[in-house]
Image (cartoon, rainbow, N blue to C red; front, side):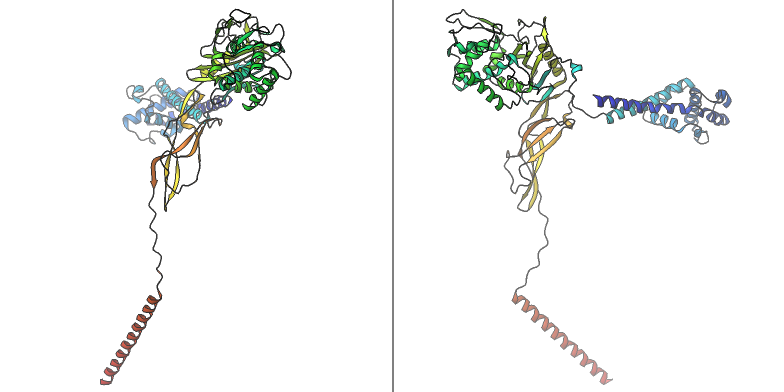
Length: 564
């Protein structure tokens, strides 16, 4: 944002720097007037135009336009007409604008000459065209294409001490504030509890139809005012109903009952919670209970909670639990059916947190609150194919206003206003080539993308300007690969901030080019011993015959000399 503002200032400064050129007419009018008057190209006298020793811009402009009018009608020579008396910048400006049809000569003609007011309008129009073009060029050159910058807390007015907004599938961070700071998660802890229970059901170590009886440890670590579904010790409830009690009513005792059923004891379940968190890459999380009641050793981070929530939303049963607005349990051995309502105001307008936070596209997850942790909220939202997860921890709230929801809505609104999915590359796009060297022939095979890539990015992303990084498995192949063979990868990233938008496999296409090898000069053939001997004999005979011939010639010459 600061870079864009700096670029605008630079462009404006460059534009303003052109304005002093308009003042160059001042003082040039006197010379122009004298030259034109001497040639009879203007009416009146030069002195009449040079009031008080200096022509005004309008007067000088009038002289200039009359000269130009005379030139176009009488075809007068520029030098003889006193053209040199006009500032060169004005001549260039007018000629340039007229040549490129930026001004219309005929619009300013009046009986073969132009008056001062019309000329001033034309000149200002010409200057305006030049200033606009230069300013626009400067703005384009000085303003780089930039990725959407994260807004400041003051701009978004995020009051919570810790928050994060991330794209669900790739984990791309769109906004973060103290996202790695240790925070008390309150009942957002139950996201991990639900995840482990769902995975146990999927793995077959537990069943939704299991009937579970609440033991004495079901009230472990709880206070009288903690959130509850009123499940009593000795009450028997199905595993399915217990999960809904934990997810919708945020029942702390239900979490303890689930933990004992899944892992045999609450402590063993908590160990599983920490092990699962570590397996998800959570480096700032430590759990000491199943429900989130405050403990100085029970903490997480906004980023870690995103990782846990994202994993949870990958399971259909989990997504169903946290996305349900209302659920009625079966009657138990001590209780009639319970009607449970989701406390998440983003998906339930009947939430105790008010109906003003209902958000289109919200699909659930979990609320949380303790006096020590403040108001916490993890939310999953999907709208127009954009799927994100937000985590807000430690927010203020009360008296009908809850910053955990307000901050979440602010982040979501900003996201959907500024981000959308872009098609980064299509399947079959020719992204690279693989060098070949086959039986002395060099060439290449075209590599295409095995599949397309779509990525969430700022609305103004220029896909054509993305950086492409190709990685090949081999530098050169000595055989033509079969079509479809995977030979490398290609990654696309935003050059403005280095954000990687996707990586896809590169496979061989049927487009293979092999060049014929250049003909090599034949190597000299080695002569055999017999061939060498033959050559020697022939050469010797030839020399001998030559000597005989020479002797015969000498003898003949002597005879002729004797006869004479």
